Length: 248
Image (cartoon, rainbow, N blue to C red; front, side):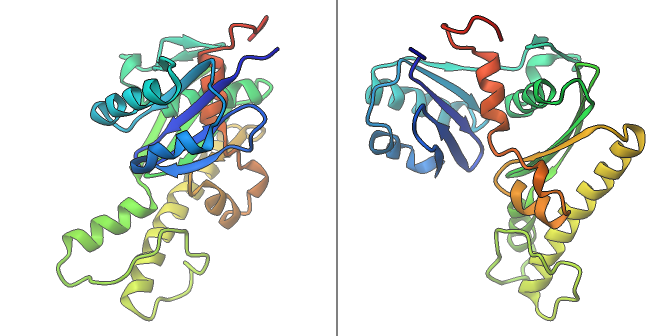
């Protein structure tokens, strides 16, 4: 019998969860008590990838112990995992979400170089090549970019959108469109440039999108087939494998 393992990918805004024989899903971090209603069967293990900060991590840990009487296991970045080497000078400083997504991407790539585009609160773009996590870029994500503009510019007052505006190449006719399409344009332009440079160097490489805005970003760039919503959770399973697993 496979272990009943609850997997959690805790970002800065939302948490993605996966549990055997359930479809999985997502909820806002501030509503983590929903787990009591979502998962009615007590898990044997709880594996967590968390970038939400130490205060939230402590609250979540206490809640998971209370809800399920189970000690959560937190993944962390390391020098090596599942055949991937970490090229960071100080490996533990690499965001665990980026590390796990890279580990999963490499293990799913068949040995081809990988570019991982994780479009969440931040947009991260990382390269894994010859089994080495090379690192990459971090810029504000779609929502963060819009919030930064409206929160720090006194005269830009509008209701901002949180999804990629598919019409970002058309000329905006009001401030709200200008903010939303401007952020969309920036995110898409950076990603498109990174993808083109990656494929110029590695024409047969794999480009994988993940994260909350990953599906929209992949669709906008005509790369829908490259969207992998559970990439961090897949990496979590490799970093903290099942006790019943024979081989990783």
